Image (cartoon, rainbow, N blue to C red; front, side):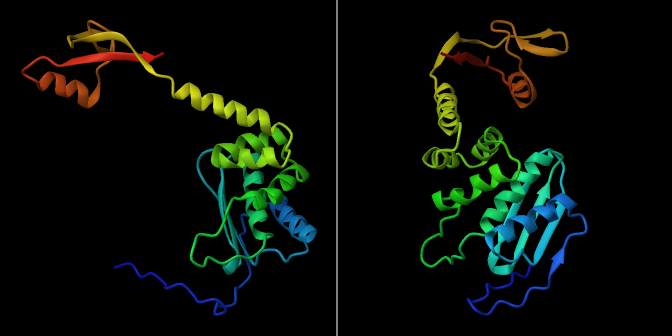
Length: 218
């Protein structure tokens, strides 16, 4: 059975032992110091930095525990934006959840975050694209905060959503599946759709003919 430590009550937190990951890049350490100094705050006592597979980064900040952590991918610009995002959490007001969930990525948060991105080397277009892909609501806040390019980014996202919701049309009406070989693939003789994996196994097992319909976006 995995032991789970009970949450601490307010005012009973144990003192945090300062720690900075030996893998923390020099640019990240300098960025933490600069942002915190500009906000008139002490840097996080605990900064954890590790490498992960893939290009994108992720992060988490726990102000009540004095922890800021980033898992950085190969994309350094994304790691920089992620660190700035977590620093925007760190320099914000300390709030506690009472009866309802505390606001996390609200207008007040992005009032801190987008100026940080702009001030510390993240172009507006990059900030909108990357932040918008993770937190779509950030684009609405960016429009309200008059971030350059935000209206266009929000309109483009809306267009993508509307395109994804286009109705389907029948490309090939319902028909019996007849299997034929086409090079290394097994396809339906009528519509040419590839039949693979579990679906191919089901077609071969069935005693009665299987039927299907081929659809396409309208």
